[in-house]
Length: 395
Image 1: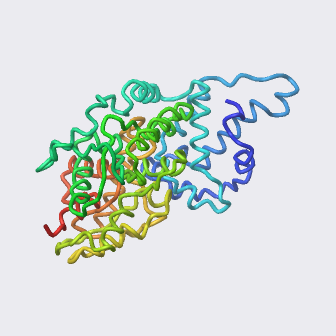
Image 2: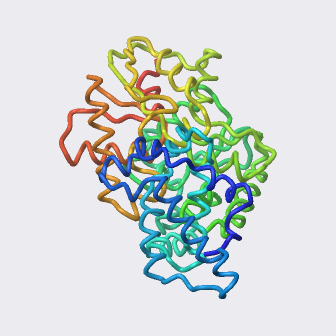
Image 3: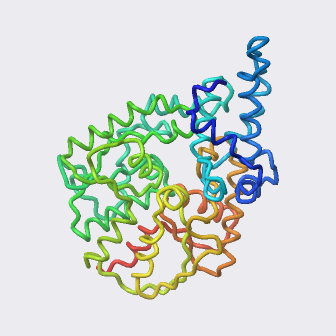
């Protein structure tokens, strides 16, 4: 491990850590595992020790000392068993950009050869098939065939005003495919001029970033930007908060990047979505990348409140303080048991509200919470906001 994976500002910020342990108090991995070694404060302490061994005064005097692979592997355990939810960064009293630091450490460990085997699988899948599941990329839009009345063009047009960037999970995973099905139906009802990229869509690149392989991202970014340009589109709509964040932070393209909740709110305000009454009590789970990451809190709530008959109850921990569902940061691939324990905590909190359904705006949150609810036969509906809006459409 060496300093080249960190910028100067990160090295300065590390020294600002006061060891207050607030990051440990809000960490979903720590509370689910009861293991303080998964906390941010422990991770920073470990990183400092590693970097000092490589570049401290004694090293300069007596030569570079090789860090044992066992020590790096042990450090890797805490680094990769993290959902990258960003709650530690949110609460940090000195403002350390912890989420970015965690990504830099993962990159450092990959460069040092100390990382979980699943990291290699992520790389191989993406380079081979351009999606994280290693499915045939030609099948990205096969979910269209599951619609009640799929159009002949399959929503793949030569050009359109809006490109709906579906994302890997919603394209391939059955539990999440209802999101693109419902959103496409809503777009049709509102007469939105949109197209899919189909097989021309590649993964947004986050699995590479989140697994410490940022250097492989440019080819995915350049391909997706070019695919949208060919559609002559002015907007890219993402229902996946992580795809949305990737497009906003790393693509630097000329298109307007919009999350589906923002787009749905626009359609509601413009009167393009007539909504009928639904008698349902719901709560809302803020996805980490959409809430803490993109600061989109109001639009999804305004959409929920616009549906007649919906009784909305806030979670105790909401908005920037919302607890992670356990599905982020590639944790499900690295430690599925820990991911499930975090999901349990989330569902327990939701059940305390008495809501009939939890609504979110992320395919991974839907997938993670639905899986836990079904396995444990819990009486709770898990809905993406697109599903609720589609249910309320007054046809």
